[in-house]
Image 1 (cartoon, helix red, strand yellow):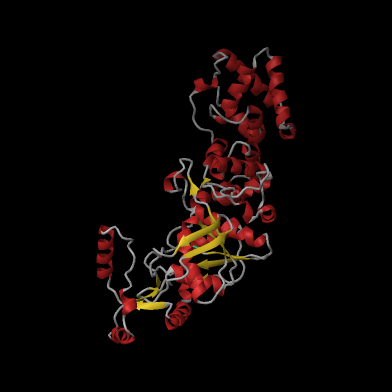
Image 2 (image 1 turned 90 degrees about the vertical axis):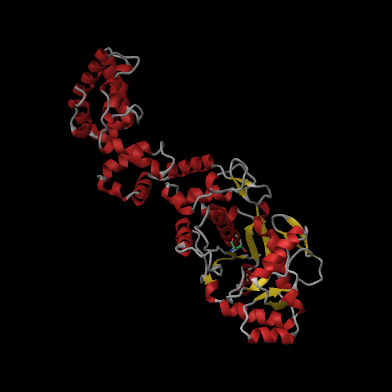
Length: 472
Ligand code: GLU
């Protein structure tokens, strides 16, 4: 089965993690079946439209590499299409015009709630005669077009690809609005028309849309169409098991980018929010996922968003990059890094690659390579050493280093620098504490940093000698 899927975000806010996961599932279901992944912008809610949201969707998908097939559909371009379909529903009596004022509807709702009745439209306008409707129309009265929930069937059911058989009684469903008073379609209507027009055969979306699905199925039936298959994917919750919100991780996609996550790590993380491969394998590239993914392995249980796991995966992806690749990514992330000499930058990247979990962490960790921070001289002395032994250690090292020319210096590997330091310790009857610690602090200016051998290797002759000289 070739799946034609679509990601159908509403530009009513920034693209969030839940939406991205839906897009990823849509993408994988389509690509894994040689089908098509489409993008549709559901922008019919003009009041909730957020400036910049459409651009953010495009940029976000591009950054993640979730490339869509074909033309992007924007519902705002297709208002006449929805209107033409609603006319056919009006003709068959499957839809009707409703002229009730907002005021009446609010009062009705209040009363129903007070009477403990379901707050649904009471179908006042369904009883209007054709003449009355014509009269209202002639007067230019504002109105909406509602779908008439048919008396039969009394229950709508479908075989959800994730949740199995779902059956929902039609009884408390209200005659929902298809076309609003401004002439624009509602989500429930435009969504059906477009999924049909775009030949979508698999709808993947969050399970908060389960209650809307019977309405959609009724519209498909009223238009004489077959409905697509539905897969309602589980809600994402924070580690507190509460629905994901800003507080527990549901930030805009752009923030993940700004915080230095790699798109491939984020995708690898997101796919596990609901799906699992059925093996213990946990690292998948996008092409590997296209092969491994199957909608049948999406679970029903809420998916827990664990930022620690994301950090772990991001670290794995960072370590898997080659040094030149990681250097390029870091420069793309922070263009100010470009001003450093490439050789030095790559050496710093080599040393720090295993210590960073995000690209953002590099800036701070690398700062002491560009400029040594001012530090208190007493931190040069390790607790197992003494000021005298430390000075002796630093002196011995400086002397040994000064004896090396720059060719000898650059030829040394980190391993060889370690041996070099160890030799200086024994040749001068010192302990490691008198040499390794103070050399490290003298080179980094920090109590925590890479090892002295790594620092000597990365900083190079001139800078290392300068830093060591400053301890006198
Ligand atoms: N526009 C809806 C949303 O933003 C799409 C729901 C669907 O996929 O049908 O989630």
